[in-house]
Amino acid sequence: MSIIKLLNKKLQRTLFTTPSHNQHAIFSKEYEPFFKHDYSELEGFDNLSDPKNAILMAQGKVSDILGTKRSFFVTQGATTAMLASMKALINPGDRVLVARNVHKSVFNGLILTAGIVDWFLPETNSKWGIYTKIDTEKLKQTLEIGDYKVFIMTSPTYEGIVSDIDEISNICAMHGVYLIVDEAHGSLYNFSDNLPKTAIQLGADVSINSLHKTAGALNQSAILNVSTKLDVDIHLFQKALNILHTTSPSYPILANIEACISYLNSKAGRKEIDDLIVNIEQFKKELTRFGIEFYESDDHDPTKILLRKEGVSGVDLSNTLFEQFDIEDEMNNDISALFLTGIGTTKLKLDKLKNALRKVPTNPSFIPYEMDFQPFPLVKVQPVDTFNRDFYFVNNNDALLKISNKLVMPYPPGIGLLYPGEAIQRWHLKYLGNDVEIFKE
Ligand SMILES: Cc1ncc(COP(=O)(O)O)c(C=O)c1O
Figure 1 (cartoon, helix red, strand yellow):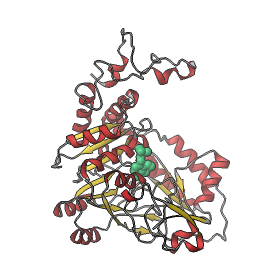
Figure 2: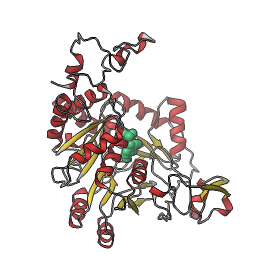
Figure 3: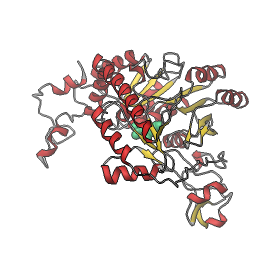
Figure 4: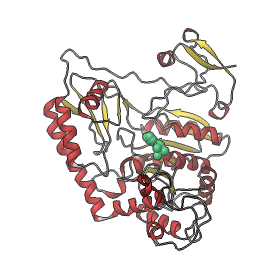
């Protein structure tokens, strides 16, 4: 029986269990729908930390669809899925190679696992101000000289750049390195021939999907996928999840993870994805006549709309859309703006954006920006040793080459410009304000 059927069954039981609300919104009827399915792990409702019935069956169904050894449901987002996969594969002192454009959860995972980090800089595109893909030659050379246990990377990137996971997984396998791919923004890939293949299909050992980003699921819905080829005891993943996951997982979220994957795998779900791709293609075609340029390349996910408009910065474009058209983008910078699409992005919504974009005013004397990327990070103190350290403040003028206690990170996208434990380079000073937190040596 699916999780939602289980939740819909009329329970005659009198519950003296958590939660106390008896599936009713006590404080206001307005909230009633949120409470209807909010059960705890009742007798017969299975248990996320040791699933044997409905949850195990739902996870099994998803695992069959995604072609994995196990697909664990996570009700605390891709963040917890990443932390758990790192805990399962990394022991204290293991060397970990990490692409610099990862989400901040990876740095936090290094604190929790005591893995020793080396950073890897992906390629960049300064015209668009974005990280692009992993250079596989550079990766090969890096793995040849370092004794790494795990390589962690993001694909697709926030902006939709997909790396060559097929080649990367071969390189990692050749060097005995486990590959974890943060595929938070690529949850639709299994369900359309017009999208890239999934990281698991292309040989990753572990991948993480964040279903609430583009797949139409409730916030915090995520899946941790483990490949059939991974030679690590699968129970380590359950054990890691049990350390990090709440003991009161949300049943509505669990049920919606199951329903989300069933929908994506259905004829209707697949059609919605393919229609979305066609609608976006059309949207782009119509807008290029109005001075709007889209990021496009062979390795770009067509559902990610990254654009710039001649004569206006990404920030100003975003502000105008917000203030004059009530449209909010996902992310913007001096150069471009990113519009997130997915399940739920109707043609009507795209039309509204299209009409607004045409009307955003421009300035003929505007000079486009070129992005100045962060320098290669100089790690002086490993993440595990940064957590609870004495620090003091120095003036910005005196901060050069001191070791930062501060995390500098615009959010979104949650990619660190400077992490605690790294030497402050000239490039960082402009982000640090007057008083800079630095470690006591
Ligand atoms: C690439 C990437 N990975 C992981 C996460 C974390 O996802 P969640 O919000 O599901 O915890 C994000 C969130 O922005 C992200 O962009």
